[in-house]
Every structure is written in structure tokens, then in C-alpha cells.
Image (cartoon, rainbow, N blue to C red):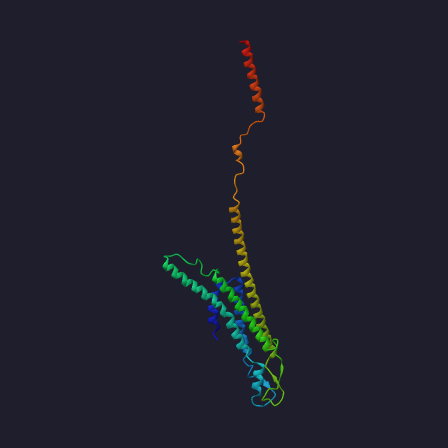
Length: 271
């Protein structure tokens, strides 16, 4: 399978992702795709050829192998990687739809844009991005559960007992390099768990950022409403309207008036 094409396609999602999304994509391609292509396929390449049972009964080995390995690890991980990376294409498709819609709007309205930034996670794109995270975490969790149920707790025993038809009796079956395969299986399981954790962190980050923004808008609206309902009025004239007068001026004026009246009375008496 050509994983380079998928990598080049998903690398365009980086410019629409948050920091958590970029870390998630790096973990997928470094710790999962790269390990899967370089090492895991070689480790599991001999699982059918080197599976041995201590019997010569025709068909017994094939039946026991099918019972112990209902689905190959390689094919299961390949399906898991395809299902996990496909939700990111939802975001790219939504952005491309916005860009095409914006081009039509510009052509009809002579240069006026419908979206200032088509890749901005607002409105429907925010919900598409959040839904893609839910799908990615859900697919990883589902495949981990399937692997756990099929292989009984991520275990690969060195010796397996098989008594299915057409085996004449209970036979012992052995797989090649069980310890190495178990290490690789646990590595892929831990990598998947870390990717689930990163998806959950990104969901918490997006929802927390959205709630904080809504709270800021609500507080701003309440502040503006309070200011409109309680407009400040001048309860008293400004201090500049008051004249600064000396409190002793009134007494001086009264004494001056008395002296003038006394002078007028003396003049009248003299006449």
C-alpha cells in the first residue's frame, strides 16, 4: 500500500489544525505508519508460513491458525490507520467547499468576500472539526477493543492448544517469534492510546476556548446593557460654576454700609 500518497494528502490538514492536531498527525505518521511500513510488516510476514502444529493431519494446521488469528494484525492495523486518518479529510473537504463558495460570491459581488478566512474554525467548520476528532478517537477505541477481544488482552502465547476438527485430538501449536510480535503489538496499542489522548485534549481545548469566548461576549453584552440602562447624569453643576468668595467679605461689606449710613445721618443732622 502506498502510504506516501496518504501522508501528502493529510499534510495539508496541518494548516487548519491546532497544536494538538499537529502533534497527533506527527504521532500517527512517525510512531504508527512508519513503524507499520518499516518493521511491523516484516515481523508478521512469516506468521502463516512458520505456524507449526505437532500433527500431520491435513487441514488441522490451517484450521488452528484461523482460530488463533481470525484476522491478521497487519490487515487490522492497516484498516485502523485508514479509518483513523479519513475523518481529517472531512475538514479539508469543508474548507474546499468554503473556498469554492467564496469564489462564486466574489464573482457575483465584485470583489466582496463571503469568508475573511475560509480555514477559520467558526460556524459549521468548527462542528466539522470537532466531529472529526470524535470519529478519530472512536475508531481508535473500537479497534483497540476489537484487538483486545480477539487476542485475549493483547497476548500472544508461545504455546496454543487446538482441538478443532479435523484435528484427531488436542494438538500443540506454535507461532514464530511470539515475544517480538507481542512487543510490536503493545507498541502499536500504546501509540493508539496516545493518539486517543491527544484527540481528547484537543476536544477539551476547542470546547474550553469556545466556552471562554461565549462568556466574554456575554459579559461584554451585559456591560453594554448596564451602561445603556444606567446612563450617568450630572447630579450637580461642575465646580467651575462656583465662585470662590472670601467668607469675611460679607462682614466687611456690612461694616462699610453701617459707616456710610452713619455719615449720611451726621450730614442730615448738621443741615
